[in-house]
Image (cartoon, rainbow, N blue to C red):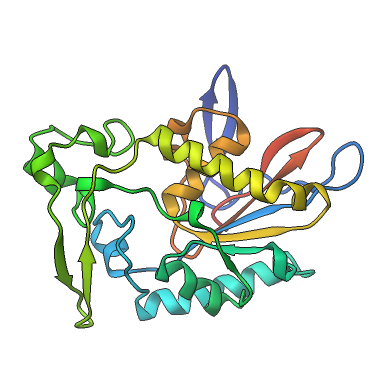
Amino acid sequence: MLNSIDVDVNGGSFSADSYAIQDVPATCSGAPEGRLVLLRHGQTVWSESGQHTGRTDIPLTQVGRNQAISAGARIRQAFPNGFSEDCQFVSPLIRARQTAQLAGFTHCTPLEYAAEWDYGCAEGRTRKDVSALSGVESWDVWKDGPKALPDFMSDSSEEVLPSGETVKVVRSNGESLQDVSNRTQKIIDSVLPKLKSGKDVIIVAHAHILRILATRWLGVDAQQARLLRLDTAHYCALGTYKGDRVIVRWNC
């Protein structure tokens, strides 16, 4: 049984839940169009700890690797015709590339626009830590964004992961939500000709960039992306129905 939430968006509404919004055919009046499949990478140690993970190149945990394999099996069942080599794309970050490989999408082309939100001074820090360091009470990435954080937090550091691997954490000025939304339009523009020709396209990337991409696809405010839960190694599908852009599946 699905637990749905009706969300009011610009005078209209759409339903968001943990598994699927609606499973509709990828056809409208005319030739069938392809689906845009979005796969979030598997678990990392920071996805478990709640540390903001934007551009830090952090690998999957073993759990994340197993999740990626399972996600690939679910996607192949849902899309038995697969994805041609020119329709597989991946964020350049290692956690996404590892997920793509383990899920069986071995011909992915790196797509720089699909990198995660640059969290700036929040990078590698939890929301609670950011609030304490910055003095911005109850700082929230969706409401306040990285650019609200003071310059003194823009230090870089190295962090040792539980595996013993050291990762470099770079804290810049970051991106605003609008910056990220504009970047997702470049992703859509690059894959739209393939979708229009009837091909399914898959992009393996990150939670926030994919959620924001979905709002851009729907033509709603990017703030609404916070209402779309997307778990590690879960996939979504965007498409068209009767001429409208819709969510076909969510968090599957």
